[in-house]
Length: 438
Image 1 (cartoon, rainbow, N blue to C red):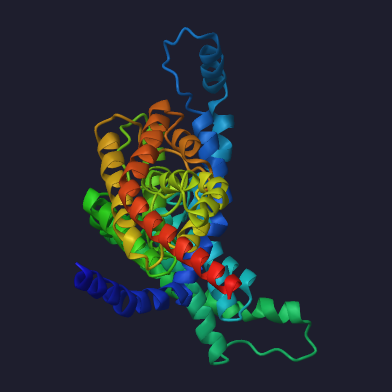
Image 2 (image 1 turned 180 degrees about the horizontal axis):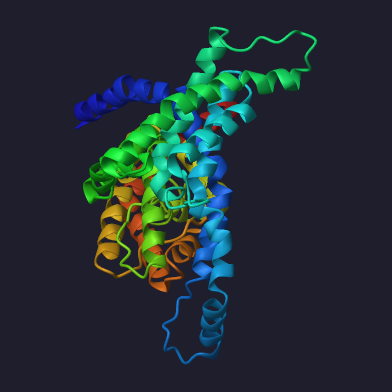
């Protein structure tokens, strides 16, 4: 067993970790991740308003409060949905600008100009004017993958032209702001000359906008990414990276963010249209069910630490309890430590995998609602689970069960680690006594 563990840790440290470290610092990956993060406040507010516009009561409810809420929604539905339509409904616009801004910053270019160029280019292919109006159909979840591609393409065009000093040269006497605006003329022309003909060709040949065509191409990938094997693979990779000391959640989450938001958009569209909500693998599902308390689902371990006979573990338990309630567990991961600790490796990997299977089954079989809203990831697990599933109290029960289950899974390994630390503490105390006597 020891040789197998050594071999596994060697693979993680020597093969997986270097690749993950390079990936996590790659400028395009960082720009995409930071772009999604910058867009989150808009998406959270929009998700909350969607929940408010869909009360968790049946139409025939006799409760006075339920009837009052349902009456307000029926009378003012369009007004109430406006914040959603202007945030989640056009989230790809925000994502486009945010990704382009961050990528341009990494190249030391003007981030604002890059964001404006990318947004213009995205609207050109995603919302062409028809009948005097711009359609918002592809500006939400359907446009996410197009937003990523367009933002990267627009910024790279801008970077390439700047790198080779291609553009309109103005005298030094021209004010800097005017010179910056003229620097954008050629990139705009390039975007129009490349994207607009492609968009017109796609519409004439296939009757599709570019975002619709890209979604059709990604449909098998999106479907596969919403399967239980894909969930388990993502969970396994994330926690192997964490065990090696690399922020696995940032890397895996950054890669999955586009799929999560696409699935969330599909669920919200289904909810608005009165259709069946089907997508499961969305960020709140990961945060509040799979990794409740933080990566490794360590909240149960923190509760065990609080009653530990080891002074070190009790201190980590007290230090990690409050952050753990808000899904922040770096004090536990690095303070225990969990990183490269053979005694905690098995529960750290298996607990979130078991949580994923249970939560997936519960959602698929209708024991809890599907995720339809985006709650801040720092929301305490039971509250975040209820919020994201449309105030489903069954989700609260499931999260509490998963916390208790995680404590049971961690318990035997915790006891082994506790005995090891207790022996170290006894030996250290004996050494201190010997030194004092000497």
